[in-house]
Length: 337
Image (cartoon, rainbow, N blue to C red):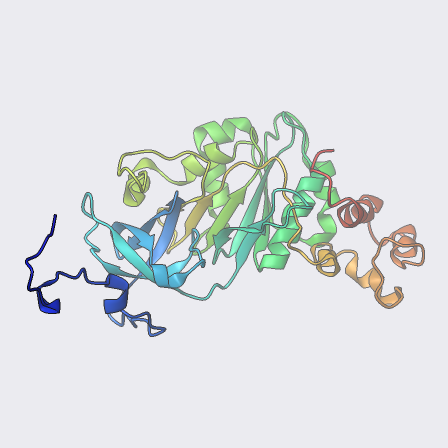
């Protein structure tokens, strides 16, 4: 059956517009000069919660950013609906340069590098003195990541009522790392938070630690409920209240001149596949002077390494050299093996 009459003309035939042809591709990207500046508070399945002035704004990444991802702590430029009202969504069009990055991999042989936090000033390594037992090797791995990423380390030792901190502090005494020692009672009463807060004023501090050390309890004490409401404590996808330690979350400290706490998920391992082995020594400043007598391109895990004599002469704890060489030679193992 004919659709048209006998005498048809090309002008009579309907044509469907080619949308791609009507909008040719271009490398020119909009400048978005009127974009507002914000800070990423948390990331949840492609949706980002940002703080713009005093408002919590939900956003997604603009397509023109490509595969570049924003993480907690990033300073970003946003356009679109910045009201923060329910069911609104802004767009992140730029990600500013980072002053520091906390990165980790799942294991030492995992090629996938994950940026956990950006622009943090320091890394608070929370470790229990007992129940569970402290893991100096995990602490060393966190120190490597901190020094490599440009963060200053802070040791937070919990549960001092169950074990003395002296042995662990002696192991790190030559590094001159600031530390805070707390007990279970202080965690419950809030006294621990007061002592830790002295090291956090005016800084962005990422907290890391494995399950059971009291990290989340400490973070909850540092950030009262009224401050948590500033971040909305919400799921960036549904808009409903939800947050678990499966993703990092930035929380503002009260009376801290702009201080922030970043609660990160508990870790069972801290892979360092992204760190060049030659930079691992930077996490052991007590051993660095002993490398002056090492042969050229020394791996610090070979027969002629000068660190053996340096430690034998009493300049550093043998356990520190063992920890360095464990990191260098067994990076494929999971922490705790």
